Image (spheres, rainbow, N blue to C red):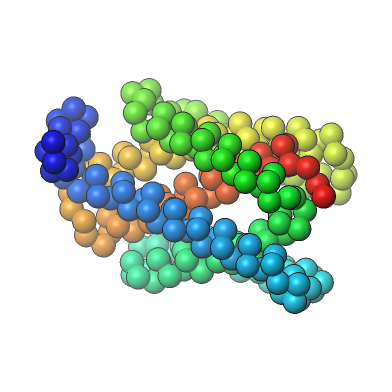
Length: 237
């Protein structure tokens, strides 16, 4: 069966999927994989350079500028996506993934490559299973999504509180909750992205921007799931 007939069979089976849906869904994961690759390369590259490590992590002001820059980029892409061109939104996504790699380079200083690789594989497997569940399940996950969003807000508050408490036990509890939250969000976001892209009739710029936003969402789910799992399974040097 060729690709065209296969996509036709999928549409007939699933009912409401548009002709453009398969290509748009592929774009979501291609963009996500590219962003993860950029983040990984940047993180390893910075961690491998003593000069860059010293410049970034010995300068607290610079480090906070990078963090604020990341937050501003995510907010900007999400808030003004409709006003941005597809090219500009894509460039901002690339810039964000690169900056995220710079700040995440610290994990190569705290954990061994073997631990990072092991946790990455666990994350990829878990993410894949939950993304597949979110895609194929017939159960409406919207109610679960609202609960997970509230749990995410609570998770952020608890993390900020523990910055002052500095409790290892509380940090471990937060990490387990974080894993559960982002495992659930992966399934919910996948279903939500599928629903939005299924309504796009063609591959116009607006449809591709929706796919790009979906890619950013799943990228953030993957990164956060990875970081929480790393805190659970990782062993500090």
